[in-house]
Length: 160
Image (cartoon, rainbow, N blue to C red; front, top):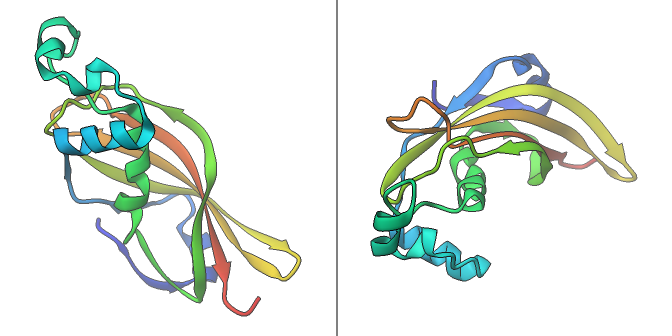
């Protein structure tokens, strides 16, 4: 489906219950896994030691951190919706997250985003819309997704 066309912040409610984007595939390289291990200080051998992982892990290879997979939501969703009248888009949180399948180094993933709800918010001088998205991160060649999440993204209006 790709990214939705340009719309206003008020048009978002019309997308409730619909898939709004399927992203391109991206490779989760061993280099990316190594960099995430350094940034998060999670240097467990299952992520970094290719020889040991090949011998001892149930996956037969190093795997990405679940939180690395989750952190790719922002990148994958970058062009998800082109919304006019938005001055800022922020990650507002997650309601549910699961990692049903491991992502082996070198695998490809992509995101499927569906809009569960678009709810107006107003707080002081700020207003906008909170989008609750169902996210399924697909793992190429796997019957199971590598990440399933319910994600809240807050869109702030200009001049509120």
